Structures are given as structure tokens and as C-alpha cells.
Amino acid sequence: MLAQQLVNGVLLGATYALFALGFTLMFGVLKVINLTYGFYFTAGAFAALFFTRYVVASVWLALPVAAIAAGIIAMACDGLLLTRLRRRGAPELSSLMVTVGAVLALNSAAAALFSPDIRRLPVGLVSVESFNFWGVRVTTAQFLVLGASIVLVGALIWLLRGTRVGVAIRAVAENPEAAGLMGINTGRTAALVSFVSGALAGAGGMLIGLNFNAIHPYMGEEMMLRGFVVVIVGGLGDIRGALIAGLMLGVVEVLTAGYIDSGMKEAVSFAILVLVLWTRPSGLFGAPKLRRA
Image 1 (tube, rainbow, N blue to C red):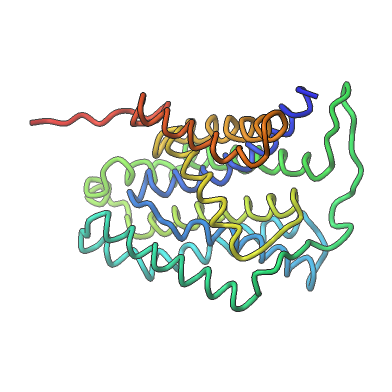
Image 2 (cartoon, one colour):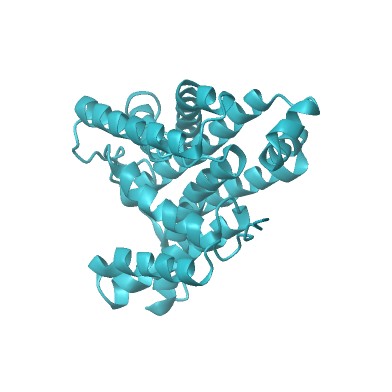
């Protein structure tokens, strides 16, 4: 029983980590808490839903479609809402308030357009077959979620650490002004970061929709709460922290639901958040900022 719960927790935590990676990348580079990020998660799930229903019922094609669609929406939202504020050097609170209004408008528009009803992916999109390993049952959908999460996380790490684009992204994250003086197009880099972050959210939306077979316009709001817990516990802007905290949160939620009460998993998650903030305000892996007099 415990082994099954731990496996379920790791599989759930993999999607939390994938979602939080884009969120922490966006904050780490652009220095803004973009609350429209949850809408990208929803957009990816709906893109996969309509693609598999009306184009091709293929999960392998639906995943990149969901990622690309959400990435384009993220890039458009960043260009329309935040680029002008960055150019004017607006304070972070201005960006936060703009994205609060934007996400309310986007969620309301999605609910009006698609209705708040729960939708299901096509029957037979993924095999219902399950595999048994020493008493631990893993479904085909769970294998797909874990495999896709590993591939996407690996691709992100390769992009940041093994390419010239990654060097530019890290330079902009460290010092945008100095990066611009060195010839890096900071506007184009910001757009790329928005696209990559949105793509990760969109892929996560499809994977969560596949795992639970439930897609609705407000699913991004629910995920944002967990995203906040993951990025703050792991450390804002720290990719390693997002990975570890995401896996940890998935295991904690599953164990809480299995051994205490399913209604208590959110309370336990936020209790961990408060405890971490009390003891390590910068997160488990975040570096504290030095203040000079």
C-alpha cells in the first residue's frame, strides 16, 4: 500500500514539477510573478482536447500541439501586457496587478466560450492497460506522464546549459542591462522565455488532463495554488528547487489523501509552505539576498 502511494505521489509530483519549472523560469529571468501562467495550463489542455477530437486522436501529436499553442498565447500575453511595463521600468507590483486583471478576464472568457463543465479526452486515446511491478500498479497514462515530464525537463536543462540561447537567457536573468550592452537582444530573449514557460505549462495541462481525464476552464487556477507552493518552497527562480519541491508536494498530497483525509491535502501543503517561510524565507534552495546599507 505504501509503495503504491509513493509511486502515485512521484507521478503526480512530476507534473507539479513540470508546471512549476516554467513558472520559476519566468520569474527567474523576467522578474515578474505572472498570474496568467495558470491560463496557459488551461489553454494547453483545451488545445489537446480539440486536437484529439477534431484532428487526430494521437497523444504523441497532441502533446507538442498543446505546448506550442500555450507557448504562443504566453508570448502574446507577455508582448501585450508586460513588455511596455518592462521598457518603462515599472515596479513589480504594476506587473502583478496587470496579470491579476488579465487572468480574471481570460478565465471568464474561457468559461463563457466553453462553459465550466468538465470535458473528457476521447475514449481510447491511451490504452487502459496497467502494469504490475512487485505489487505496484502503474497505468499506461501514468507511464506517459512520467516519460513526457522527464523528456521536457531534460530538454529545458539542455536548452539552458548546453546552447548559446541558454547562455543569453542566463545573462538576461543575471543582468538585463549588461546583457543588452553585450549585444543580446533582451526583448527577443524575454519573448523566448515566455514561449518556453508557456509551453511547459501547456504540456503540463495536457498531461494532468490525461492523467485525471478532466478538463475545465478553471483547472489552471487550482494548479496555480500548487505552483506557488512549489516555487516558494523550492526557492523562487531555482530550477533544481522546483523539481525537488514538485516531487515532494506530489508525495505529500497522495500520502495525506491516502492515510489522513483527501480534504486535508491542501491544508497540509500550505502548512509546509508556512513552515518553510518561517524557517527559510528564501526557500529550501533559494539564496538569501544580501542587503547593503
